[in-house]
Image (cartoon, rainbow, N blue to C red):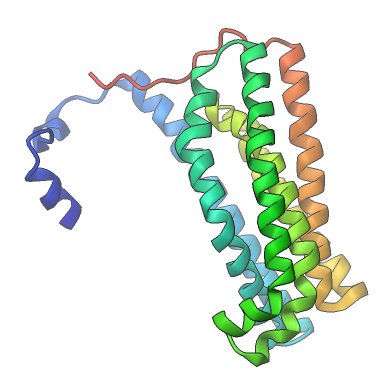
Length: 242
């Protein structure tokens, strides 16, 4: 409500826009993106709840807290990369309809983004004890064993996203939803398997393994789609703003 009130003060915004009849084709296109966003948010959240409950029941509530803390650190430093992908990379892919240009943009993203992720991960690994003490306290130093494979998984995760964003850019709703649900459940199953065999550090093993499998999936999906010419001349799902 505050945002609406502030927007109403601007000359470029009018509440009368909401009185206009909905454009069904554009609403249908927007609906695909909303559905994909909801699926991602729900599947990831549910999988994390299941993992936290499992760690609490099988190890301890402290173990669940250590994993959550590790996840927060991972999400925080990757936020810069995620924003870059959402603000620049995704719209750029959406605007491209020639296979050669799409491949070139992905290669460009790999050369620009992946070295930064690797460098950031290395710095965080080397400074992990200091980071834990600054953000938390000495009781969280036990999470230092989670850093190595979590950070490796982060690098693989971003590498996979460079291909997976084509699902969003070209509104491949079905394959995106199936992949999100499947790999969220697969993550939970891997956690159960690895934690039973390796203890808490098994969560990091599961994270890396899950995103390695996800990378293989999106890599082959992208290349098979290119061979079929799916991206050539594809409607970039632009929304009519008039």
